[in-house]
Length: 438
Image 1 (cartoon, one colour):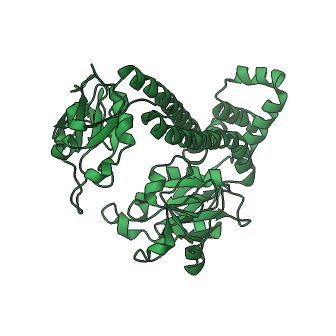
Image 2 (cartoon, rainbow, N blue to C red):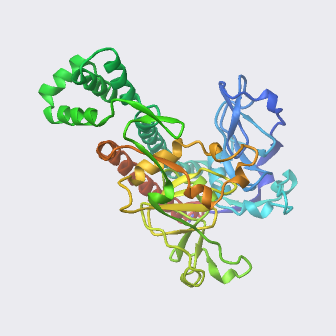
Image 3 (spheres, one colour):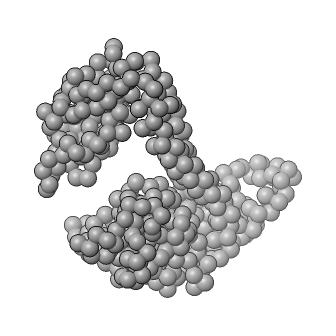
């Protein structure tokens, strides 16, 4: 076992608050990120720090006490304290992991607006392995897992962007329909118009499609059938231009919609942190997830679920937040429950629409259209959510769309579950590595 030294953080680090930046100084686009500790809040054309910085979130809502590494070539706001480690003696990333494994949230003072001071950080006790080579070896193991998690997360973002782009082209901008309408208005035959659609949905030229018909006849036939399924005309439905034959219906006519519940908070026996109990998802949990949600920060006992008649939500169901933070969307990966700020949309035989279609629809939906932007947080309620008008293309197109994106969503789910296991492995290894047990 490695020898551990118990010291104060102030023995090995200096501290300073991030800068107060005026909103007028921060750009929406630029070369160098401005990091608040919570997230990137904008950009500047210059930067304060060349290298990644070890920081602790020192004030703000929800994250005070979080330990983060900033981006490189960035500026840092006054919501964070920079922890400047003597890197001739200590590996900065090792100290990051030591602090991640420590209860930095115990440093918070104040209830309405928790904060952490430099004085309290200086006196914060930590245990470290003094040998810098051993520190770097520990970092290599933990960073290897972290980089794999980050890579999977980035791949998932790219995959979702591909699915979103396809959805937008077909069901928001109506590119294939407009291509067919334009071709017919130019005097081309229906067959030529359908060829124009095939070009639009495949990204191939007419010559490339001819070659495809020879090399991949099944793929060509599939494209042909999909092109035929797109309407030839745009019409107005309730003041909105949509392809002819498509419908718009309220969500509650298509899905079984339910709202979650919260047992009385004062009765603590209903709540749990045991993963063997029933998962209970909050808006914050949705904010921490990607397409698929696998974790909740709290759980409900089975007795709570039964006593308060809290609806159990099946796997592969779309969740939508509609109170306070409106418009977060996730798909469940197991049977779960939610609080009352989240609605769920169970697939039924009332509609041929799919979970993936609904997820992408909500991701494109303008929730500000449900009320004025100043009152949107109070204007939206369960009745509003149930009345959201859903665009319904013809069934042939939904089947064609599902064939294109089902594999994308399957890949996203697989990588999400892999990340869940990687996080579990990392979190099991972390204390053992830091204590010198491994």
